[in-house]
Amino acid sequence: MKLSVLPFAVSALLCGGIVHAQDATDHDGHNRLRLHFSKSSETDLVTVVVGDFQQSPENNYLVGATWGHNLSDTLFGLPFPMTWHLGVQWFNEQGYQPDALGATAFIKANYRMRVPWTQKHIDLGLGEGLSYVDRIPMSEQRDFAKKGPDIHSEKLMNYLEWTVDLPLRQFQSLEPLFQGGIEDMSVGFIVWHRSSIFGAFADTKGGVNFMGFGFEAKF
Image (cartoon, rainbow, N blue to C red; front, side):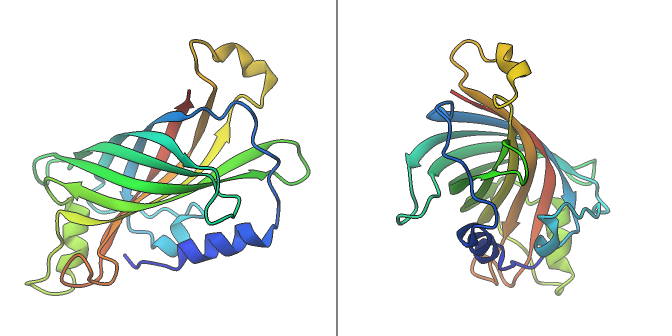
């Protein structure tokens, strides 16, 4: 799996102002909890963000939960609210090896973008940090094994997360859902990505993508 120029492309898109966001509503919340399900994919990170999905031979998947908290309203003065996150994952290895557990810690830049020709908006997120697993996923092991018999991945790797979420409170018919201190909820798409960033964390470049869907509550 190649580490792409995704962070730079996203920044260019947002700063270019193709579709600017409206000001954030008062229903953002300071804390957030995300639950997600993602399957391993052979898709390169360059095209994975547009929904291209090629199932891995192992067909393994993960179930994860992430806790986040507001960090800053801007990123160096740019309109990207920042959050910090801690996550845990359970990997189902489909019998190829014992199932595994993982943990992530990362900082995330967020951006609210209005959908063209509507008054609705979506939330984009790009996170960067670290991922640790107690057993390297089989799909990741295979990606490194292709590069040579003595080439292998590491338990501690770079982590990148890409999310596209649809906040639900903007739909008036769903207003009754928001009880008990929940300020907003969203459903969306997530790319969960581990990589060595060109060999900085392992013998050579390599990694794995997990793609899926999640649910997030803000309170």
